Image (tube, rainbow, N blue to C red; front, side, top):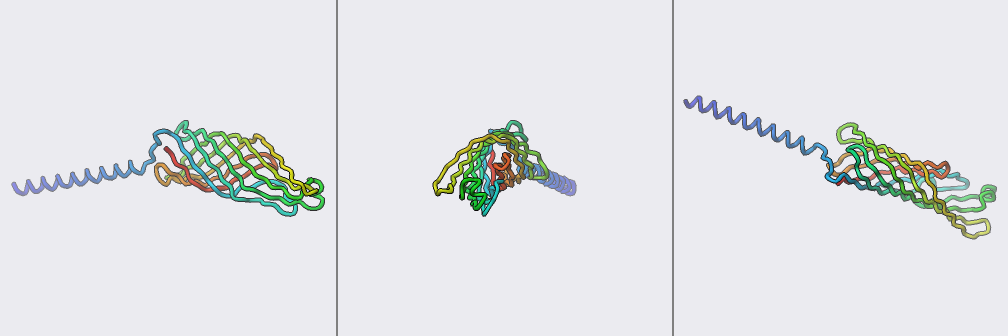
Length: 204
């Protein structure tokens, strides 16, 4: 009788331990699994190097500190409507000799800002890594301050629309936070703007 009770008790303990282990593993799996945000919005910011495509004569700034902020609404788990605001740092270009005579100025300082509207398409790669592809249109504002040959200052402002393309890699740090590495391009010939940046985004 005692032997039977002992065997029954041992079986019950083993069964309970197995159930607890299974429940613990299931809870851990649920905890690590990405959870869709309740409202489907995200915001973020990145910073890095803004690169321009203008002609250089004597000297010019090719890459300066720049960045962007963005916000989006998810349309599906892998597709979002996104708005970006780019801030490109101040760049200087110096002209001399024949180039200065042709251009009509010796020094040019450019500041560029841009709004983009488009979609962000996300594709899961391996665990916690996501590929991001952005396509849309940009509204660009470029301000150029020029020192003319006679020493006077002239300011030229130009607004234009251009296609926008971005690509990047996201790493899920938590269920709400992703770390980002992005490359963005606004296409407009010699007025094109490029941004190579890193940052983060938060979902809610």
